[in-house]
Image 1 (cartoon, rainbow, N blue to C red):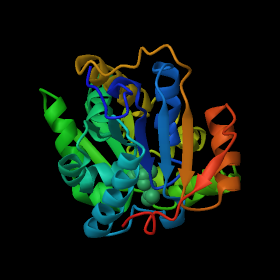
Image 2: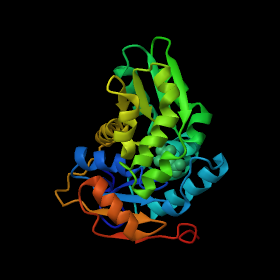
Image 3: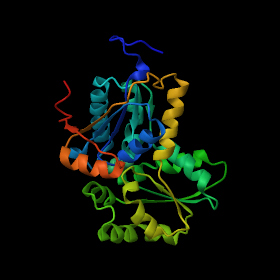
Length: 280
Ligand code: DGL
């Protein structure tokens, strides 16, 4: 156990989690459920979302600003709860964070390979994630046999999720349109390669039909977080009640309302942070 300057042991420090907005709450939800002793600091960059069609340079700049904010919160680990930031900024974040960093792509790819019997796997994500080819590489690396991977960018899913239109008829229309070609390709497993997409899971499941297994990497990411904390002797066993802080770069009301309904527990307070200005 590492001693910190103020006497607080590092294991009692929070886990820092970030995303472009609400999507990372799909990972947060699993962390709250699998690691009930851990405190968390969540940052949603709703004011600058979506990330999915921005350049690599922009995503790296935004991510490093957020990591500096999380460092000020003395986090003991950073979870990049965003596929786009994981695809573009993992190396830069790892170099800057000074604490262990967990990305969301590898755990999801491993889960998908285990779930797929026919080795025909679909991946949906933002334009940035899909064009980076990161999932094809991660899926192939996780499989000893050759896979067929079909990828499709679904950029409209993110604003639908941020708007709270999770079960709105428009979500079904958009899902049917985007997913028709993956359905035709007869995939048996579909990776939700954007942390916003589990919010639309029901519409996606209706479009794909019951024979396709949907992979939400949140559960596997939380498991990875737990394993790493244990390996590094950083799991919190202080016995104190965990604290959860939520920050957003946009409306705190919208964040707290939609976030609470997704987490199925109240976000009593969310704080607004102008992330560009919080940095010196
Ligand atoms: N939820 C993020 C992801 O997993 C980003 C979505 C976006 O802002 O475009 O890629």
